[in-house]
Image 1 (cartoon, rainbow, N blue to C red):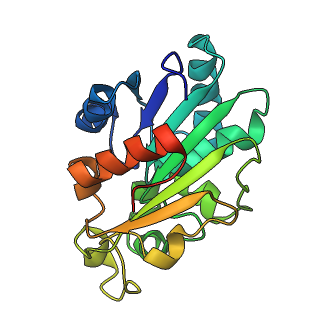
Image 2 (image 1 turned 90 degrees about the vertical axis):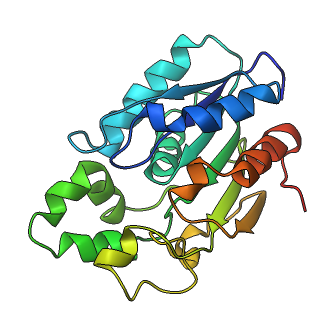
Length: 210
């Protein structure tokens, strides 16, 4: 990727851009112009947030953008790329993203107030078809295998291995360029130097470090 091409770092459910700043700073230290971006995770649908993200990417006035997205942020990025093929995304790193399903979310939805806590975005994803990665975008997956996270509280029988929220089997996406599994928990990913290093490797080379 060119040094002039921005990297948009996107958070997941119940979070905001502030929590992604450490990861963004670590990416920026490696020479990538990284910036965080926030969106309302509960009150807006995935499609509505995809439109917000598309508008933000357009304001960057860059030939291509690259995206690093945690958890639900990855679902949002995939939805945007499905709906806005005029936007050029060179590389997309999905960090702990539950692509195929979310055992934890479905369990939470059964509890009183659970659907409210999940918000409209996750509900839209679980109840609709999954967009496939675009052929013009290289996609890399970072999946965690340390079962430490809030998902274990609502889903103690979460399939193994998992990162405490997302089961490993839920992170598989067809047609990706590369994937790597790290011994980190779901929220730990935001603080992990190993995750930051692998994000930079994929942004630089289109593959993860062995």
